[in-house]
Image (cartoon, rainbow, N blue to C red; front, side):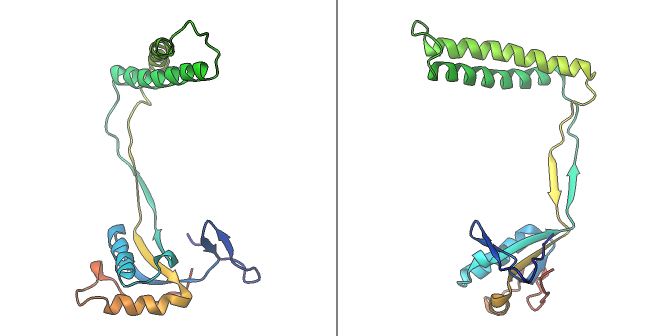
Length: 185
C-alpha cells in the first residue's frame, strides 16, 4: 500500500529514499521475477534504478503444514537451542572475567553447552507434553502478491516508458504494458 503525503509538506528523506515523491506505474506483472527483469532492462539502458519501486498488491499469506513434529524432533531442536545459549553464556562469563584463571575457557564452554543442551531439550519436551503435541507443526510462511507494479518517479516516468518500448526488439516479459500510465495511488 502506498501512502500519500500532504501537499503542504516537503518530501522527507529516509535512508536515501524520498518519502512523498509522486510515482507512476510504467509496467505491471503477475510475478515478481518479471518486474525485476523490467527494472534490469531500465538499468541496462542507464536509467537511474534508485528511482524505481516494485510494489506488490493483493498480498496473501499461505502456510502449508509439513507435518507434526515428533518428540525426538522437539527434543533435538530444544537441545540445539540450549547448546547455543549455554556456550554463549559461558563465553560471556570468560570474556568478562567472572570465571577464575584455574578453569580453561574451553572446558567452561563445553560444560555449559552440555548443561544448556540438557536444559533446552527438557524445557522443549515439557512444552510438548503440556500441549499434548497439538501445537507442534511446521508451517513455512509464503507471501505472494496478485500483481506487481513497477513504479518510477513521475518526473522521469516518460523516459522509463520510452526505454521500455525501445530497449530491445524482443517482446517485454509477461505482457508488460509499457504504455500504461497510472498516477501515484
